[in-house]
Length: 372
Ligand code: IPM
Ligand code: MN
Image 1: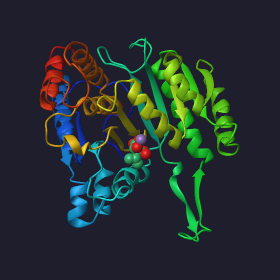
Image 2 (image 1 turned 120 degrees about the vertical axis):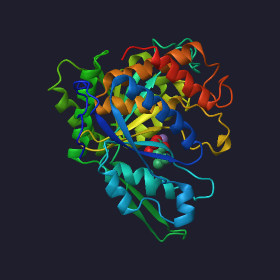
Image 3 (image 1 turned 60 degrees about the vertical axis):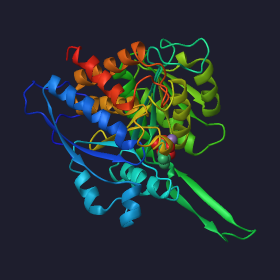
Image 4 (image 1 turned 90 degrees about the horizontal axis):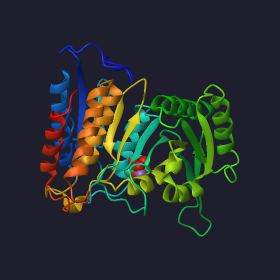
């Protein structure tokens, strides 16, 4: 349980005693480089806003696995239950078989800490190139609320007669009334608080997933009755991909299941300018949440001071928002927008016109000019 400011409440009186214990997992590849810039920006925000951060570093990741053969020991998990938030760089190592670190660290943390929401803003910042023709920041600004602990990610299934011509493989999507309802409720609350267009779209596949998404649909419209100020909408997931490209301005908040959320948020990341800027939060509104840039470990760029740290910096801003440091969170986002709008040539690694650490410095400089 957290012991400091709860979610989404205004920051309390500005005393120097507000201290947040943040577990930092830089992880693999370019993770450490982008997290270094993120912590630099967060430290600057802390000193401006008058709170303190107690960093607790953890070496989880591929290098540790190759040395010790463990991914996330119980003793570490126990310590992570006691922090105020987790700041994660990237997980994924070229010498480790795909799946081991994803399951052993990232998914294990999401499930063990019951981070049942994956919140992924899709926002085109000023000066950022989008592959969508004739679309600008005024068209691309929505948030995907992805269910994060159920569906196809539960790992329910099995093989029969594996490796034979009669093989059968099952992978079952688990959708519980409780799990769907808490996600849908979060999405309605979030849409209301965001107060942009107050429109929540359920993205599903009700014409094919006639059990799983029947439950989702019933829950969605039942909960909607309690939120008469929020407009509801529905789109099939395939059409959702189409509209995200053709008319992204139609969306305000989208709520969807784990697998569909995984897929549409990669599309979302591309229309907001790519993995260099896309951030996400794995939220347990009653517990410990974890924030991460959603791009991978980018082994190709590791150690070159060339990768874009803005996604990690934006994840840091989301973390402050969750901790209740809303002004500092907004100031970081404003600073990032200033840097994309006036400085960077591109968001792509090696093409920014600045190094990774210089981009971090630019954000700190812009932040120091903002009032917090
Ligand atoms: C993501 C990633 C993960 C997921 C992988 C690495 C397991 O793609 O955070 O979107 O599928 O959730
Ligand atoms: Mn993904």
